[in-house]
Image 1 (cartoon, rainbow, N blue to C red):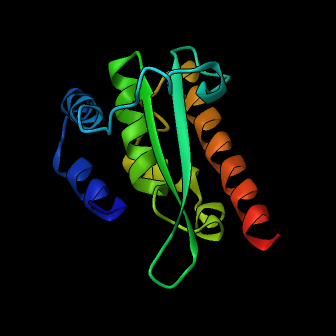
Image 2: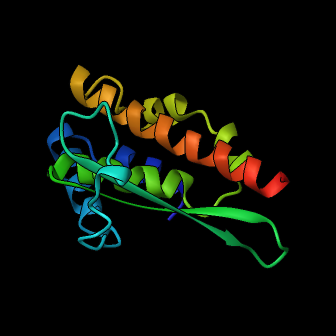
Length: 143
């Protein structure tokens, strides 16, 4: 599912209560993390809920480095936000990841005005972590 598909799905749902339920359903589709991956090294700082993010480097068919992300949270809504971030960023090259304007995407989904300030801060902490992992991947690929 692309981000445009997600935007279309959000536009189809008129009520924010329905959209929250949809976000929770998205979280149920996340690839599970192992117990070992729920580690302090993978924990995202700056989130009120506990959030873990794992990044793995892959080579695509052309030999380009892509970053595959997996994540989890102990809160249902936040798991859904993690799922949205996985769709936005996972499987892309570091340069593609760094070029994504997350705030614009979240605005198109209407998330900016419907999340508490604490959840918004946590969401942008996750984005910052994803971007930091992408920068590290880009540096590793060019070394």
